[in-house]
Image 1 (cartoon, helix red, strand yellow):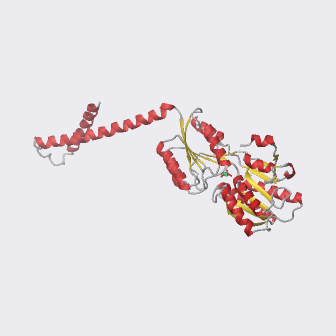
Image 2 (cartoon, rainbow, N blue to C red):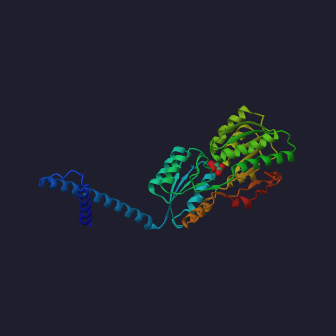
Length: 384
Ligand code: GZL
């Protein structure tokens, strides 16, 4: 085969050079044929070149054969997932949901990277998936910006990207986003608080907010949504600091708040349950009483199992869920793509709001009446 290819190439190159030498009548007459040694030298050069070209072609053919073998050998769909990290109970549930859905038994070869809340590491993980030549890339973006360059690389590599949970706000080079409406979560917390303080006859709200990871769409939506209601109601937001969605972060910020705002606050909003657990420790240590019937109303987000247990224990007064189990919906997007279809660009997963019976009040968000779920043993049992 190789000989045949070389001789074909040689013939082609020699023919081309002869044709090039037969210009129009006006062309100068061809010099006398060079002495035999020169012609042989040319032939040797051309033969060398032809051999190089054949080797390159054979190498390329080998690579293609390997790629086809890789893709076809196990028949699995290769998925790369760049996860935020392992900062919260919510994250643990989200990771488990993805690993359960994108298993070998279900026909997937999952490359999972825990990016440990490190934006650079997350971009590196995505680039490693491009190197691997996966079929799909899933990203839960630590923060909402800085994505267009790496998403362009995915686009150039022809690898579809699906965004899960948090949003990417500075690029549209992805197929679908599957997640919750964080702004609605923030507004729901604000509208519930309005209905609750009215029902309790509480005239003033002096709130402290422990924010999530700054720049994440979850933090932006929850902060902005609550602030919109606070501004409308003339409430005072004494301070907002980030606890980075961690229990340690929540405790550290609440310790500082208990010193700086002692006796001045009656509402604490934690942008996830793990921050609320840390804030509870800090308030316990500072002798601050919180929960229904106490000095401070404690509001949280996520409504993970451990969070609902604190609602049932009368510590967290209301918990606003963010559903972490989006992986089955993401799989639906991949199946649509596999069958040549076009998935929806935005797919919202439903969230619920939780409280004990006495804290369940009627309220609406953007004119839509909201349903609250009473926390019971069965509800906790069924949570994530
Ligand atoms: C929200 C998610 C947030 C959770 C936190 O969708 O991104 O990140 O609220 C988690 O618990 O750390």
